[in-house]
Length: 396
Ligand SMILES: CC(C)(COP(=O)(O)OP(=O)(O)OC[C@H]1O[C@@H](n2cnc3c(N)ncnc32)[C@H](O)[C@@H]1OP(=O)(O)O)[C@@H](O)C(=O)NCCC(=O)NCCS
Image 1 (cartoon, rainbow, N blue to C red):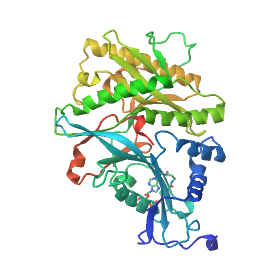
Image 2: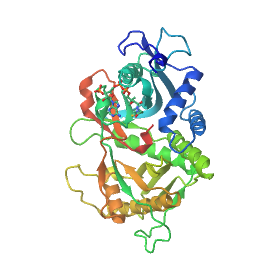
Image 3: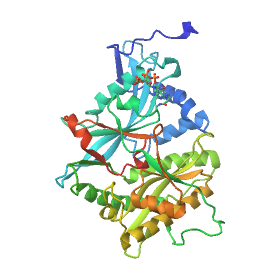
């Protein structure tokens, strides 16, 4: 056993570096991390999925970057891969309270992995520290610095917060699937199903409204508003993932990607979802990627005050309940254990409770912890950051 183990450098060795893998090394990382992450896909199918996902509009042409930690003194292709991860380029917005909204490039980190044989030696820590330094300037214009990057921790809050990615609100509300045969459905409002062809226009409208929202000066303390842009490329990447799994495991492809409704007052309310096919243990979830309630911000009161609903808010709650119910019906058709909405707004929570009065907002402390690192030169600014639209679409 011991004789098979390569001589490994200490994790603080100056010869270690975070670099891009060769094609063979990338395949080696998938073979290894597929053991943990393939879920119910076979390992070859998992590798096909990863190849498919790196060739989407969101990921191709440098949208995804693969990284490995290696000892640079070792032979190419013989060198042990001490750690691996990916970064995804994400369009993002930032506003500093003066009504100016800037579009910037952020990154999301995913697939942080260390070979089980090499764990506990500090390589993952070193890799994340090196990645933080790389992402300060990675894919930024000459002389520019990143403002923030994100990740979604599955190992609690400590490991990443020690390295600069601090935990942000990570809640969800879950609703059970319901079958169409259900005797009496709580909502009788008709919704329209959303298909892939509907998404570009809605995402563009969402982006426009998001720019207006984050550009509005914050009412309380000075805050830096940041958001990842929920654009159609991002949604399609999630859908490529669900479609690959559905085709592979169920030999059918889900075409309904969300639901839409307009209130009598003309406010548009919609949600875009994806089906997450998990392991036998985790089960399947219908994840709401993005929930949009037109004009919702105007109706929001501060978090500490009880919300006083006006007539137009009531209509939005009813419309949102109709959408959530459409999601529950879809979840039932696809054998999903629940519908989940991440960081639901007050109106969305009220809508969920129209359907399930006992529905609770769950605060996660272990899995999918939305974490943000401030790369700006002034570290004091970190505490002022408000992450708007911190929903599932940002996950990677
Ligand atoms: C998470 C992982 C990359 C850590 O690798 P490692 O080699 O054990 O990490 P290191 O030796 O560099 O660092 C040890 C640190 O990681 C923490 N850690 C390791 N695994 C952990 C886990 N499952 N939960 C919480 N913390 C964990 C240790 O507590 C220690 O933290 P500290 O130094 O802040 O006290 C590795 O266990 C792995 O690949 N796991 C499977 C994939 C995975 O879960 N990836 C993370 C996705 S967010």
